Length: 250
Ligand code: PGA
Image (cartoon, rainbow, N blue to C red):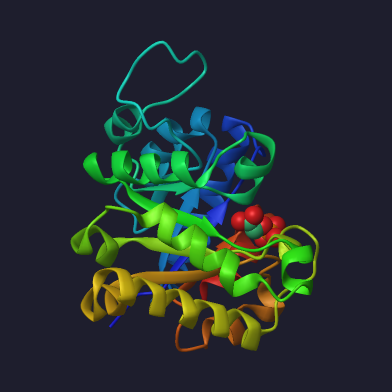
């Protein structure tokens, strides 16, 4: 039985004061009525320690949005997995399409980051998804298969069983244009099949596969009701406590 993970991806939003205000508001709302799903907030680096203090002792998990693949070194401006683990970060978004697009991340660097995250006990939220031209050209399965195979290369069945993969069609991110629940389910099922081919049925049955891209309170229940969709990665709609909780199933 896979527990659904609803993860907020705050991107480059909120100061630490605003993050703390969110955490207090969200905890108060949760206290009024919880959810059976697992909840995580993936925040900018500067907010992580404060959020750990706020969410510590609650069921809300903490995530980062990026990390370097090297253990340490002369990489000005970068953050290592060990630094995140020290704060008590549970998850790290890896290979988000915005990082692939604006920060030159490749399947190869994404793969290295997955290896390093697992080594430090951080569960990756590994993002894959096709661009609009690729879907229009009928290449979406080919593109996602390649991203999955390259990203997961060499991670092993045990890690594959614990991973979170977020299927985020690039054309649905921040555009208000959500994939239909049928399109999302079809691709999440396909990804599970690919994980099965690479690491076996047991790992595929345990890996959690999320959908992301314009998830909001109005469409969350339908998307989360699909059999191969084990949660959501939520951008814009995760910034307000009441909106986010409505998606989490509170
Ligand atoms: P969105 O972003 O929900 O604002 O579309 C999703 C994401 O980028 O993870």
